[in-house]
Amino acid sequence: MKLVIAAAIVLAVHAAALVLAPVGGMAISYGFYFAAAVLAMASTVLAWYRSGTPRDNRWWLLLASLALWTVGMSLSARQNYVMDNSNPAPGDSMFFYILYVLPVLVAVSSAPVAARKRWALAIDLVLASLLGVLFYVRTFSIVSIEGAMGPQQAIDVAHMLDFENICLAVAALLRFIATDRADDHYYFRAVAWFFVSYAFTGYFYNHYVALGGHPDFGDSPWDMLLDVPFLAVVVAAVARKPQRHWMPPVYLVRFVQSASPTFLAMSVLGFGLMVIPNYPSLGIAGAIAAVVGIGLRGTLAQVDLVEEEFRLSRSRDELEGLVFVDSLTSLPNRRALDERLLREWHRPGQREPISLLMIDVDYFKEYNDRYGHLAGDDCLRALASTMVARGLRAGDFLARFGGEEFAVVAPGTRLADALVLAEDLRAHVEAQAISHPRSPFGVLTITIGVAAIQPDAASGPLELLNAADHALYRAKHGGRNRIGGHADQRAENTIRAV
Image 1 (cartoon, rainbow, N blue to C red):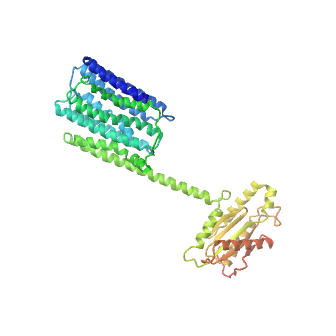
Image 2: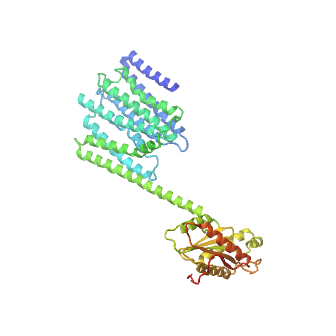
Image 3: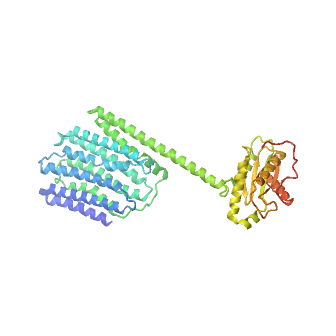
């Protein structure tokens, strides 16, 4: 509030000085304008310093815009004092009064997040350079270096300034309203306050003061209006960072952020259309560049979106892998086994039984006691590699059930075939001759329980698990290093190739 009061006092002093000392009015107004511009530029440097780590370098773009406006004011003073030119619209100063928006326009048009910021920035710089050329051509198609040739040319300049100021004010206000980050809110508050106030005060001053009988600075106390935008920047930049009292809808935020690259392209298109009557080739080139530029920006955004979707999909697959993979053996885990059993059980058109092999490592506790748990982990990894290397049918599914137990799901396999597979696995593990001194067999062996059930609506995978577990229990109590089939299943003579 103190800053607002101080700004109001500055405006009142400026107006009072013009009323009390009309003879030196021009010097007074120039003094206030330059002082206000310098204060605004110093405030942007302070705001950049306060923006945190890393610092928000967009403040330098606002500083560049203020500096360009100050150059335009310096050229206007040069026309008045050095060249003794009283024309209210000299071409050189008018050009800088239009050109000053370019740096901030680049900031307003920037997308908040882009994987290819260098490419996007290159496109923006090309469009900004073209817009600068269009500014120059449009300005000097209306006025000469000395100024406007008549009232109509002065009105045309005023309308061009109105178009520019209103467009940028709307764009800056949209970016300010649709901010979801503190640094964006802080920066676009200063930008919006400057350009919105400049659009109103510039319109009033140009049409009702400069074109209303007071073409020279110092002729009217209304000169103090041009201090307002710069004092607004001082208040917005020096005041503490704003706190959001409301949050815009997420859709609005994303819509404005996605549409922001079009602001620069639309400016190029608008000024390109303006110069077409006098410079058709340049105007058409500007229009084409605007369309191509926004198309390229849209393509970059689409590429970013596709890559982000691919990254998220890959991350999701990796997370699913962590959920369904046993970290010790790299085999599917119990959760993956349950998922596979459920999917096979409810497979449409299932006409063959599903076999399940429950595999237990014999005397594994004794192995751990003898060699330690780390050696036990190595043993389980070696066993998993052995069973994988043995090879299973493409449709079979090997998983770690838990602890020292493994399981094999064999869809479309009868009990007799499953028993052959189990015996082959048992013999293959025994043939590896992994030393196990505390086993009666002297080497590492496995015991396998086998069950086969025909899926139907009245049963479920749990029934198959229980049957295979019971078969394993009986085989272990029968001496281990053997296979056992579920008693309720009939071993058939059909042999499965393995």
